[in-house]
Amino acid sequence: MTLSGSLEQDMAYLDRMLGVGENFDVIRRKVIIGGKDACMYLIDGFCKDELLQKILQFFMEITPDKLPDNADRLSSEFTPYVEVDTENRVEQILYSLLSGMFVLLVDGFDRALMIDSRTYPARNVEEPEKDKVLRGSKDGFVETVVFNTALIRRRIRSTDLRMELVTAGKSSKTDIVICYMKGRADEKFLDVLKKKIANIRVDALTMNQESLAECIYQRKWYNPFPKFKYTERPDAAAAQVLEGNIVLLVDNSPSAMILPTTVFDVTEEADDYYFPPITGTYLRLTRFIIALFTYLITPTFLLFMLNPQWIPEGFSFILLEKEENIPLIWQFLLLELAIDGLKLAAVNTPNMLSTPLSVLAALVLGEFSVNSGWFNEEALLYMAFVAIANYTQSNYELGYALKFMRILNLIMTQLFGIWGYAGAILIALLALCLNRTVAGTSYLYPLLPFNWKKLKNRLIRRRLPGSLEEKKTQ
Image 1 (tube, helix red, strand yellow):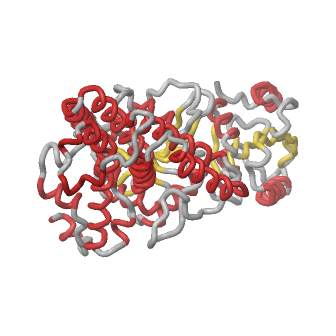
Image 2 (cartoon, rainbow, N blue to C red; image 1 turned 180 degrees about the vertical axis):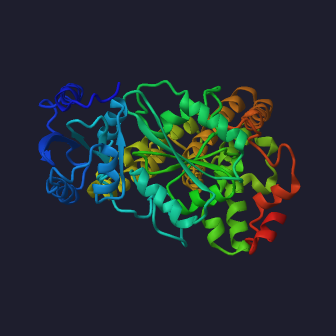
C-alpha cells in the first residue's frame, strides 16, 4: 500500500495502525507548511527534541510561494538536515516511524518526508565486566547497534569494510548488522548466511542473539560445544573482521556474534595479543592445560579411589583420609549442583549482601559440610579447583560443555571403571571431532584437517606482522 496524497485519508489510516489516542507515546501534531496542511508523527523518547524544534520552525517559516510541489524537492532543497529521505510505502513508513524516525506528511504530496533524528536511551561505552583485560582499550559494546558499528568503524578505516543492515522478526523487526571485510570474508558462506537470515520466520527475536543463533544453526542440539563466539569488546570484534570472519551485531544486545567459530577461536582471549609473544603463548597454553585438567581431575581421582592398588607409593597421600559416609560419586555430583546453585545465587544477590553471604556460603559448604560428614575434604578440594579454573575460559558455553562431559565421565567411571573412563573420553573427542561450525567446516581446524603452519600459529603467539607482505606469508 502506498500514500494517496490526501492528508486526511493518509492520516486516518496511520492513526488506526498506530493507535493514536491509545498509545500515549505516539505523538501526532498538525501544522501548516507553506499554506498547506501537514502532519508530523514521532515516538516520544526516540527523537531529539531540540533538533526537531529547529527543523519544524524552519518548515513553518516557508511561505506559500516558496513551497515546492513535491516531497523530493522539499527533502533536497528545503530541509536543513543530513539524514533525510522520502518514502511512499506505508509499511516502510510505519517501520521507520516505530524505529524512531520523524515522519512528515504534507497535503498533496504522495511521499512522506522521513528525518532520522533518532536518539536511543543508552548507557556509557565502558569496559565490559566479562571481557576485562590487563592492557588494551577499556571501551565495550552497548545495546544500541549504531554505537557498536561506530566502535568498529573507529578501528577499521578501510573502504573494504561492509556494514549491511537487515531485519528479522515479524513483530519485533529487530535490526541485524552483518559486518565483514570485502575480499577477505568467505563469499560463499556470506551468501548462505544472508539467505538464512532472510528466511527466518519468527514473530520476534525475544532473546536477541540467542534467538538468532538458534534460527541460523538448526542442527543437533545435544552437542554442547559452542558454535558461536561472543565478545563485548570492539577491539576483539574488529580483529576478527580483519581476519576474514563475519560479525553479527543485533540491536539491543551489547555483544558481537563471531562466526564461523572453531574451538581454537573460542579459547582465544584479547590478553593473548596485548602481551609480548612469549607471555601470550604462556597464557594461551596455560588456558588449554587448565581446561584439560577441569575435565579430567575429578573423574581421574574417582577412578583411583575405585582402584587404590593403581596408585604409586609416592602418591599414596591422595587417598581419602577419612571414611566416606556418602559414595564419592554422589559427593561429586552434589557439589557440581551446589556450585551452579552458588553461581545463580551470586547473580541474584544484592551488592550490599554479597560479602556476608559469600562468607556464610564458604563456612557452610566448607568447614561445616566436612565436619557434618556429608563431604570429604579431598572432594571439596578438587571441586573447588574445578569451580575456580572454569573461569580461566572467557566463553561461558565452553565451561558448561566441559562440565557436561565431566559429569558423563564421572557416571561412566563409577559404572564401568577404567572402560567407562576411557569410553567417556572417547565420547568427548567424538563430540569435538563431529561438531561442525556454522559454515559446515571442521570444528577442530587446523588440527582436523591437519595444517601444521596454521596450527602452530594457533598454539604459539607469534610476533604480529609488520607489513602486508609479511602478513600474507603467515
